[in-house]
Amino acid sequence: MAINRKKIIEEMSKVKVVGNDQGMIPAFGVYVQQLPGDFWNGFAQRMVNSVPADLIGVVENLLINAAHECGYHTGYGIITSDEFKTVVSPMIENEPEDVLHGAFAIFTAWGWAKSEIVELVPGEKMVVRAYDYYESDLMQYGMCLRPSAYMIRGICGAFMDLAYGGAYDPKGESGIYTFKCDQTKGIEVGNDYGEFVVTKA
Amino acid sequence: MVKEKNIEFELDKTFDPVRCRHYLNGVCTVLHCHHYATLYTQLADDAVDFNGKELLKKAAEDSFYAVLNDYYSQNGIEAIEAKISIAQQYWQVVGMGMIKFTGVGQYTVTAEMDYSHLDEGWLKKWGSRTKPVNFISAGFVGAVAALTNNKPLGSYKVKETKGLVCGDDVSAFEAILS
Figure 1 (tube, rainbow over the protein chains, first blue to last red):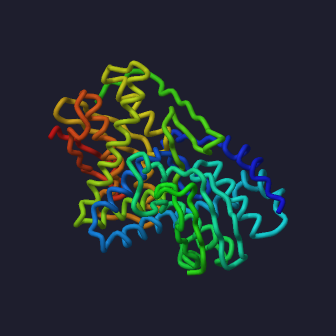
Figure 2: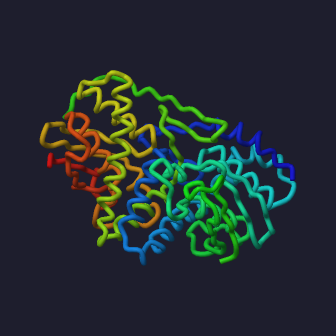
Figure 3: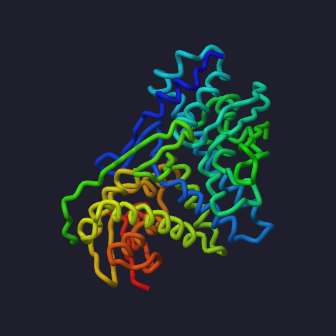
């Protein structure tokens, strides 16, 4: 693998985005915004805490689904962007595996999660570890009873969809949800890192 | 119309290479797209039995109250006009759209948006609908209403009275002292 994570993180973390004259940030085929991590955490936890126990899983899946769609569409925008072509594409020797490794370097560079792939069985399985991620900030209010990195779960599944789920479908009617992700460890539940296992759906 | 004070929002963006996190004026921020924001909004809208819309508004109000309050404190900003100007610029910088506070009184605060991340994103993803969807901006308006009137968090109840997503010319918000 020729992917140089350190270089990608150094280069891509310099990308600065601000709203244009309309207060909009059109980028990577989507509209982007940059809000505090505690806002997203705050709503997710309020939702999970407000429903009865038998509905917690349903709410969690909807939160994961939001990230899965985000990761599918924005992820496609990222790996076809000029920035990706300039920084990452010259390092790619094996597709789509190197693209996946590059995507997680960007995922890290843009502050979603300091994460990397630790196991990859092409087309079948991927294991990702995250050593620092904003969703674990819930720890500041005390240890969580359940893993709560819904965003990372969704993104991991989406990236596998893009790699092995077939051609990208801008309407999201095919190609997406061919993989699912389980969180097996979490900083927010007392582990040293978060661990995410992606398998076929 | 609120008379604005010409004061520039100072933007300090940093990246912590150890934790791999981005900070905007010291606050950890993350990039997300309109798919993410609109699906969170849809979840809140669908969760009628659990007051989802209010939960999303409250999460926004809490977070943006803290962000703006810190900024005002650190930069010695006390005048209402200056607070409003900074709030408007902040919403623009973070990509949430163009918001204009059209009236700021002790009992009522009004605001309008010509451009809105939430509405444009919803229209792009699902098309128009009959009810407004911008619960996040409503929370933001509640935070600004409280801060400009030196009131505690949660002092104002905010209603979105028009929505770009509904075909209106603007999204409009009305915050009433509760």
